Length: 166
Image (cartoon, rainbow, N blue to C red; front, side, top):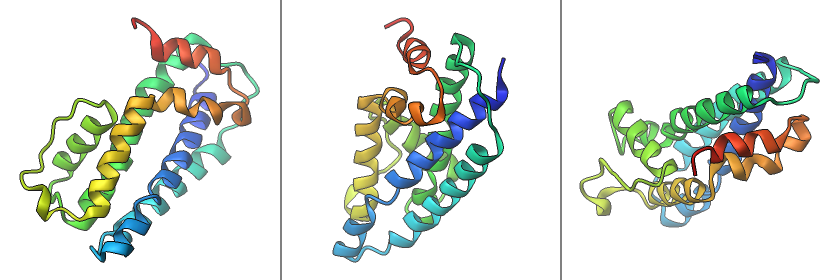
């Protein structure tokens, strides 16, 4: 298995997530809910880790089905791990495990939640929750196929891995 190619693609996905983490910032500013800082910090951490992975690992090899499965599996996991940061940093969901659950349920579009009272949650965070569900509905991995040509990976193998069994 080509681990360097897999890590490079995961770095590109984290860079994509860092951009997505900035979309709720205008909502937080408009409503004055105080969550903008949590989004900026989360985006910086995601971009830093993604940029490090993307820049440090280079590979000219093509993406095989094996690497495709690894990217899909770790892509979902990384998106949930880093996507949970705004909930945790803002204090809206004080337990990182619950924040991870909330984000993973959004990215997998299950709709399960740990939030008991939506009126107490910052609107920027609610918008982020909606974005996670939208990205999950679009298919994170299939949406990132637009990024993969810049990485030099085979998008067809990744799409096959994401759609296996559908």
